[in-house]
Each structure stands twice: as C-alpha cells, then as structure tokens.
Amino acid sequence: MEAKVKIIAGKEEEKRIEVLQDDTYEKVLEKLNINPVEVLVLRGGKPVPEDETVSGNNKNEEEIDIMIIRIVSGG
Image (cartoon, rainbow, N blue to C red; front, side, top):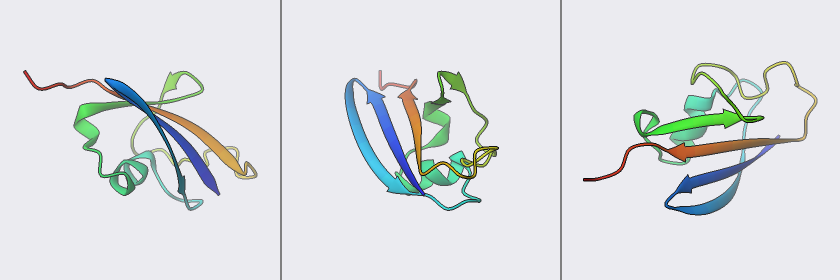
C-alpha cells in the first residue's frame, strides 16, 4: 500500500512512501524522520492518534492521503 504524504512546515512538500497494513501513524513519522511531538497528523482533514493503524477500516485502499503539519518552530 502506498501513502501520499503532504508535509507543511513553512513550505509544502509531498512524498510517497510504502506502508504496511499494520503500520501506525507513528511508524509513518518514523519512516519520514519526523519527531511526533512537533507535528499534527491529519487524514481526511481530521486529526488521527499516533497509535492508530494507517489502514484503519479501509484495508482495501491502494493509496492513503496523509497531511502532516509542523506545529513547533524554532524561536
């Protein structure tokens, strides 16, 4: 299964990564080398918990859209 990930952190960036059926959103962040404390993860415009599996109830989806918004900035 493939995930299309849009990362918004000052600029917008899009990446595609392979995810397994039992991968959690935390695992997705780990694959992208993103600290989960610094971001908000959205799917379908709604926040999702880090420990939820990406496939959720839609195990037959071939592509999943995830948005990651960086909420912590240096200051």
